[in-house]
Length: 568
Image (cartoon, rainbow, N blue to C red):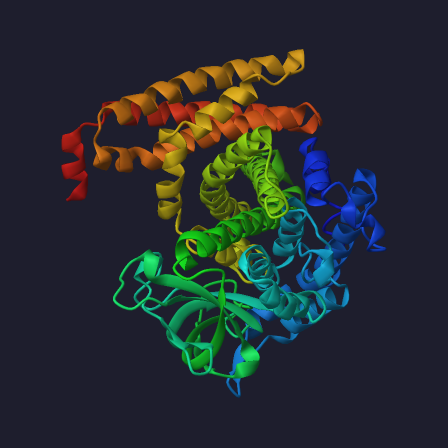
């Protein structure tokens, strides 16, 4: 099989983005570790070389092992044996290979055994693994939990738990949702009680839909404050499976990502340790954790989309009908062109968002050591706003595009795509969850509309507009400037009506309009570095222009009375 990093030049392309120099320098604190750790990079070029070597290893394992096991894992799935989750044979082989390669805890500091990788590089690894098997990407990607421990836990907890990931290859889980508290996490009733006599927190209750629920180390959201009903009564805890205080009630039988165990768990007097401060569990720690998870779903979505597009392209080039390959028919090559545009644009949005998160989080870490200078604080706030605005936009668009690309990949295959003889059937099932978990598309819109009303998206669009372009790309900017004027006026019209219900009704349309312009600019700027992106950018922007005009017409023709009609 091929190496899933080296056979995809577009990942390496984004690794070469100009902002990576700033990101790596900040992450490495100007390469302060070089004298303390033999494997720490000495400069930017050394760091990039290290990233590439690790991504090569991830790509090799993904291509040779994970992708080869994907079909068998989909059929076998996990099971419960003696109150423990037993992975499918292929899943265990996958994890063992990555563990032996030292690829657990990639982003953790070196003092805990990690590689201190920038978030963007970890997201790239996630995309590669998800292309091979989206279900397994959930298990491996949950090492994000270690990052949350590193960001918010006490030093004692860090020293106890973080080496278990880096050295021990521990698995992680986020135990957040409950039977009566899915998306509405502030409704969590799972109890945390402090045992003063033993100086110990005790957890009791039921958690449901927990990905990789029988993990070695779990982060658990629980109500620590009596007589509270909102987010201010919730705290975050870390639980070690070795205590054996959790019963696995069942593994859910899912449509897709079948290798990833989704569990219902019963905690009974389970000892745990508090992360950070009481009452900040949801409003600070889990929000950070979920934003990281949404970035992970973005990577998973792009990975699935990459796999589906490749399968469709290959089939269209090989399948002959009416005396020629079906890729020669306009109905098919247009479909593939749309798929390619959605894949490239969602990947560009993925890595743009990752870079924003990297810079913002690097500034956060600097504040642990010193006070930021005024210009640094200003820049941190800028990138925090961008990260908060772009993360739900990314999750929404990448997951919807992933579903559309997987859908069209089956269509290109025709009847054979509906059979289990080709991978697209599994990819289609795996894709469906991406727009549901870690916050549905509808909930991402609720978060992303703030990027419209507070001008986060518009301000960034104006920055893109000022970037230098080659003469042959200027016509694309002219189209995007016109689209921006339409978007700005339409958004203002809705906001000025001061009707929250009407704003909510049009929120998705407004967010998608902004997303189309942003991705159009990102593809155009990508074309400055690689000519292949020019045709993709032009095709994408032409369709985006028509799509936005349709939205403008509908928004401007909607009246308040229409909402009552639609409700019926």
